[in-house]
Image (cartoon, rainbow, N blue to C red; front, side):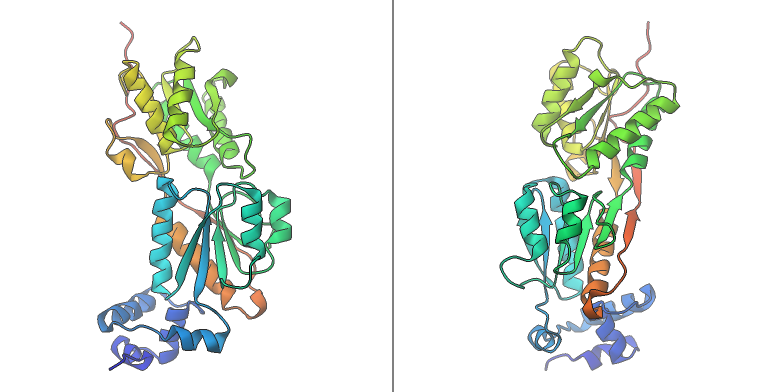
Length: 341
């Protein structure tokens, strides 16, 4: 016999309307009540009639997720968390890869190709604020990252300036003073690298250390090979840094590879900090100190914003601008500076 919404309500001790609100994400429900209802849903194996619900509401139950790179460990982990959260709302997620291409991002934001999705979560790399202002109009949209939607869409992001400042301050506290940065991306519009560079420089200046342009390395992408190449350039450039702040864990792992290949001792001679807290960094040798954004909270808050907007008449919910917490996780790749004999 098919489990009904009323069955879930009886098991959870709440009204059928409350169960409907939890399933649809259409109203604010306390965390305790939501947990109780979800427990009842899981125990009973309740599955809503998606076809009937979609016909009544004029919705498909499908949302889109647009990320720059499917093979990126960070975006892969985030996509998995978003899919898990969507499943709790009985949503299906269609994932697209934009590769940071402006036209691909614009096409998804404007909904070209017909109304298939009820809403979209997107991490834009190529479109600037002006483009987002024009294009983020045709369907409910939540932006992940730094580009300001100027009040036309919800945005969920990490405070990259503060996070980069914290990473660099950690290295300074260890006695490191020749701190390089790997990861500037002047060719992108999203502003992430720019903000992390700002936090890096701010921490140096506060400690009385003058930033050195020759120790700031630009990359075309945030992959291991780019980090390895940038680290080689730093080591071949004359004065050798005693620490590196890499703007992604992949870059940091590439830098770590080059350091090992050159016979450098990490962290004794070179301390390395990354950003993203991907799984690879926990199993590198040494394990990677990193800035860890709360990826689960990014997924939860992004889909709550999307639900509020999807279920609002005429998409009239005021846009939210949410900052998600982060923390510095200290592992084996940072340590005291080597003592001078």
